[in-house]
Image 1: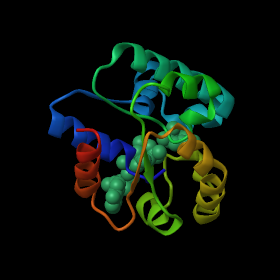
Image 2 (image 1 turned 180 degrees about the horizontal axis):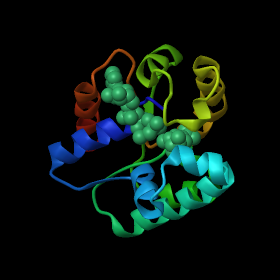
Image 3 (image 1 turned 135 degrees about the vertical axis):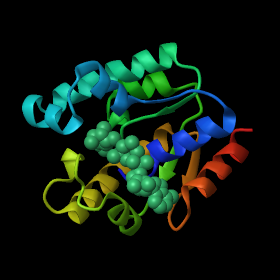
Length: 156
Ligand SMILES: Nc1ncnc2c1ncn2[C@@H]1O[C@H](COP(=O)(O)OP(=O)(O)OP(=O)(O)O)[C@@H](O)[C@H]1O
Ligand SMILES: O=C(O)C1=C[C@@H](O)[C@@H](O)[C@H](O)C1
Ligand SMILES: [Mg+2]
């Protein structure tokens, strides 16, 4: 969270003139509920089921740039679906992530101590992100446009 997936996907879509999808937005549109409410009312497991289905639908239907939710790759079936497509891991360190997400409003897994929650998620997930990525781009101290430019070079 705060790596810039949604922001950079939008810039890439503009640069390439292709459509952009974001699985978090797809889930909110299809359920008519906000992600934070889904977590609170139905729990994380239910959200992950919706998310796995949203990723599968997007990969089947969508031609363009796809931004995933930060925890989508926790599901093995999602990792399998990503094999064979270019996957960019936007790396962000603790300090920049904390600055970017602010109080973490709308990000249910950051409730409580935002800094401690981000540190725990980075520690747990970094190996998973590295395992699915075909490309890794560092985002610390860089503008979204600079990150997008590097990805355009990498995927030319
Ligand atoms: N490279 C960057 N430098 C500074 N701010 C950034 C950068 N990338 C994104 N931001 C800002 O950080 C915030 C979070 O970005 P964004 O929503 O794109 O992250 P995300 O990875 O999609 O997060 P989530 O996993 O919660 O969906 C936004 O306010 C955005 O403008
Ligand atoms: O990293 C995560 O687990 C999450 C990231 C967001 O994109 C949302 O999918 C949700 O807030 C959970
Ligand atoms: Mg996002």
